[in-house]
Length: 288
Image (cartoon, rainbow, N blue to C red; front, side, top):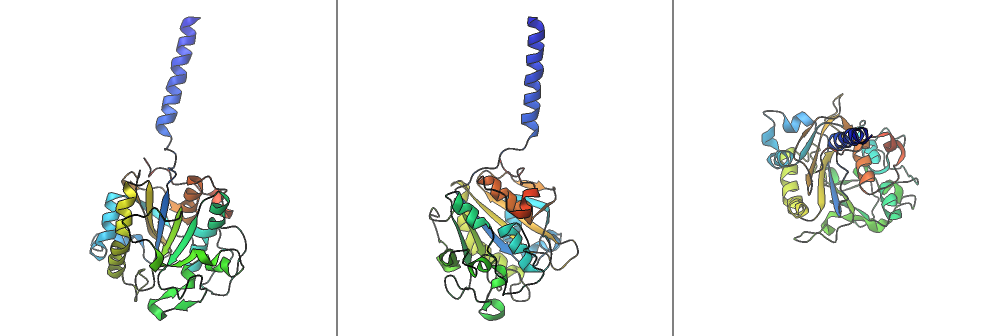
């Protein structure tokens, strides 16, 4: 009797140990997450042998952080991908139009319901809360890269949370940042050629976000750098990089999309999944 109970206990402990060792760790709940969205470049155009000289800073982020080697945008052109990241849906949009207006759930609203905060920081926006289609010409701000502006038009997003990048903290203390921030460089700094060619974007990222990245490592915070879409290729294969506190450096080959990235943020803060993100798999494996 005693021998049988002991055997069953050993087997049970063995199963529990195996399960614990095989399951990925839970996603950390970060104090701050900053997501920078670059434009129109494929994974190979940044990381393929012979191309790396374009972007030494971004390649350094990939080496010291977690690089998703099979990350894919959802569609072309830009706007539907931004809408997915913000709302879990393309909202049926198939172009870069300025005149859409949405009133349904979105990431900022989910965060607010949970007692958390959001802000969008757009370089070159004409003024706080502006919903203009463009400011600054070809090298400036574009509404199609700022998804929350389409909810603001319907009164479903507060204008005060659509900020100029000039309002982004410059360090050394970033504790005033919201829970989640989206950073949208202008067309001169987002790799959208020919205006924002990669070396300029790489330099801008280092000059404007590296201090936050270094702060994040010791302040329970995270930096994510991703792209809206590739260079109009059929595969839509893009880079996505995680760096900061509790990130496990390496290259990760599971296929992920913008839906999975949004689902990761939702799980991080216990938010109800938005639209199609409910079918996605959170990215857990990159965290310690």
